[in-house]
Image (cartoon, rainbow, N blue to C red):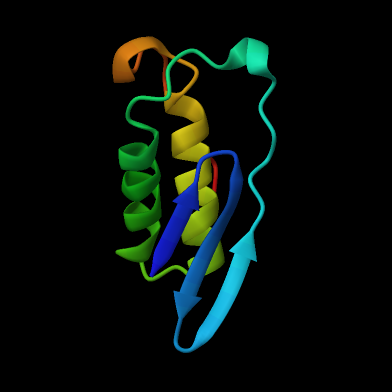
Length: 85
């Protein structure tokens, strides 16, 4: 089970273990639109999960995706995605 909490830590319960993953702060000047942040997180998370990656790597990809989408208006992708994870 994955609980996202916006700018607060993401909580993951997996195999009887609960782990908290900090969200890197984003300067408020860079925040444009939070619509789609949760969906973006899920997309990033699942993109690693289907590759057989560990939960920590899945969360990192989810955080990256959410961070990316909240910096653009209306859930648009107006620049190349550069995730290297």
